[in-house]
Length: 99
Image (tube, rainbow, N blue to C red; front, side, top):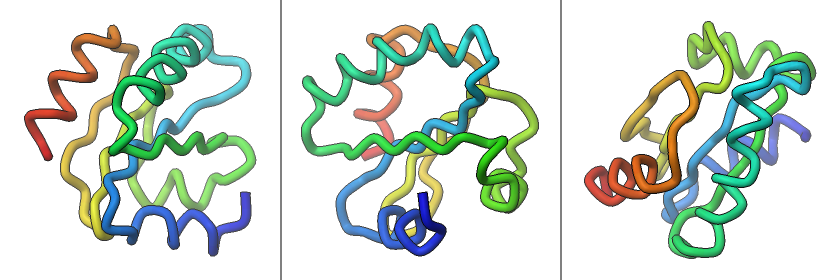
């Protein structure tokens, strides 16, 4: 993903959930079906995946220390950030409470 696209996405009016992940990470792989289901149920939130190994500067900018790290953005502002895997219901409740 080009950096320009990333910045355009997170500065949008529509909320964006960014999944900072690594291909070798087990919990990150567990999050894939959760995020896929979430994208179908919460159409008002875009989901963007960022591979930390391919985009280390972006990960460093947001102080991503562990993967998966999820960050919810709206208009370029961080509304919420957490490391670690979550269930779909936990994630839905968290996102809904922040919007």
